[in-house]
Figure (spheres, helix red, strand yellow):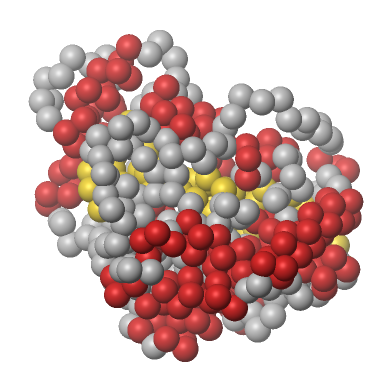
Length: 429
């Protein structure tokens, strides 16, 4: 790329060159984070950005999970079995990123087909956790989270089917936001679960998550309640979210809860009856059946190319009857209604994940992998199932982060982001 490029945004040009120099100077540090850079398009992108008089994301560098179509590049989905073609156009939300002035840096690494909460990929490598050397970064948007944590990108665009932006955010000490499912178009994005997939994003703070969300979301008018903060209750479920929690995670959560209370918010602990019903739902059936359906034409003939941990989850679809799957969808609709009636304009308050990032070496054991993957996804999947919005905000105790998760009801995205500003400030005091 020519550094003398005609640009009225010198800071952005310098930022791009600084990022590229990091790749060249210390390739091992960023190994496995990106599957490819969009370097051949940087000059074109910069020139287009310079033409914009205003853009929500102007001056910001954006990494893109390798699940989104980007014009001129292949979408791998973390796999080796997909038939790869050059994308002829951007995914709709990525097109919106361009229009808002964001510079697309590259495709980031991920769990194969986004089917895990740990971020492990045997095909393209697993990014190392910057805060816990040797540990997994969380997934499935693993490379995206690490790209933000290492200041290689300002915002990472990802997907969230059961926590795939919030889990890696919690594991790497950044912020992860999962919007209401249909608020951002999934056109041009590879599917894991059509029922649960959401486009999400990660950044260092709530403000950047909000900007990315505003740039990508559909231009629709959704009713957003404007309530005074004093009317808000933060509800900690006594019957969900704390099973077998690590002692240090519990202690850090208690400190965070105290800071929220000291900031003037009402925090109550109570039994949430709808969650007892939710715990009985075989949520795994959604992703298993819908992923098997989506890739049926390919995976059956190329199963030897699929990560064994992913393949066995896809193949469980054979255990589910058509009646069970349709009943599952009906039950979900009823529970969403019950959940929204219960929570109203309040928020659930829980730890994002109840364990510290597991060591990658330990995850080579299939039984251990299954155990920690299930635990990692347990709290975050709730928001996907209830079609709500959810955010993980980092809280550091003794220089180690945990995620503090707030869940809100369907289409309360702006409301959640607004409150999250205050919670972010409270946790930083």
